[in-house]
Amino acid sequence: MIFRVFEGKLELAEAAAVRAATAIRDAIEERGQARIVAATGASQLEFLEALTATKGIEWQKVELFHLDEYIGIPASHPASFCKYLQDRLINKTGITKLHLLNSADDPAELVRRASYAIASAPIDVTFAGIGENGHLAFNDPPADFETNDPYLIVNLDEACRRQQVGEGWFRELSAVPRQAISMSIRQILKSKEIIAVVPDARKAPAVKACFERPISPMAPASILGTHTRATIYLDRQSASWLSPATLSSFTAS
Image (cartoon, rainbow, N blue to C red):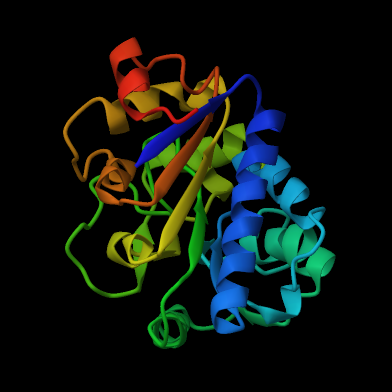
């Protein structure tokens, strides 16, 4: 794992998009297709805008997997991650090979189908974020580091649900679903490469908790420290709580 730290979120997003585009192109050149996992949320907006504006990606050769989704809201809901991906990635690129977690379907059946599909071949690159409570996907603390199931039905903790209100996806806490479908920690770690896009000052406490303390289910994204090809893209604000020693040990130029 390495950090890359940028002055602002736009520089961060552009650099992460360059690396993501390279990973996709390399996979297509090597095997004729790329299998990717896309994250959603406010932290990914600039990154996905930069990635979808990148020229020279054969998106028709990309197979897309969904990282997580709420249970109990329709795909048309403004907070739906299906809608987010349709609006900000799929419609802009023309991806046709996709596995969305449509919450209109039975959650257990969704988990079964998505797990079967993702297990059929390796994932080339996963795009991820880190939650204000340190979550990775919707694996809130204490996260399950042991299950081999590719997808899970999980309970969302209050800190995670409050983040969704704070980002403007829901008007009030009572409107935020209490359960979601999430890719598991072990499935995320199976990706050949992980690009974690983590801007903004509100993420600084979680970044510190995940990367300056022992790896723990109480800081789920800390597990990224075990992945040899995970890059954490930070801006000055999200990196502001890290010590100089941590930055010097893990930061790439």
